[in-house]
Length: 224
Image 1 (cartoon, rainbow, N blue to C red):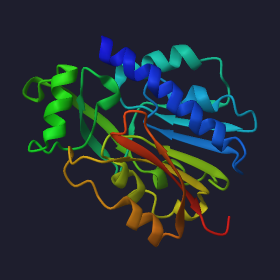
Image 2: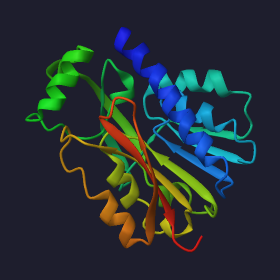
Image 3: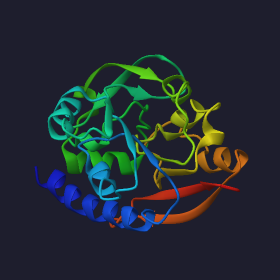
């Protein structure tokens, strides 16, 4: 699929740019939420000081491939479930361009969504979906310290829900990298910036994707 190959190439460039900037930041652990095929993970594996990688990917086939690729990497712990604001079973919608699969509800009035579906050949009426297990950051890391941790969240419009599920652990986190989309293709997106500013985080860097349809925003906990 041409569109898939195209985005893989520019995604690799984008992620390498983020890892190059991040290698001098003060953190020891990485939580990769929305690992997909490991594109972001591979770029951060180059940062040798990172002691542990916690990677979350709910798509079954992609998770199985991740296990095969990273089976010998002792620093990497893979989880085949989603993260959100509650612990329950949640429906995930699988797109032909699997990097855009999502747990979010679509805004069918979005012109950008219609354009994206045209490019990827996605028909929302015939879209594959199934239930996945969803947990929260607070639940998964209840007994694990997250001090000096870098969190990356790329979950196609579900980022706010993930953050809400970290009410108890959020004060331990040092860096949070969140995808910020410029178009209204999802419902109930939530005000991520307001939430993080309220929890004493500040914006330190914006990484614009080469096609400029979204950016990754890096937040840092004040005082850390």
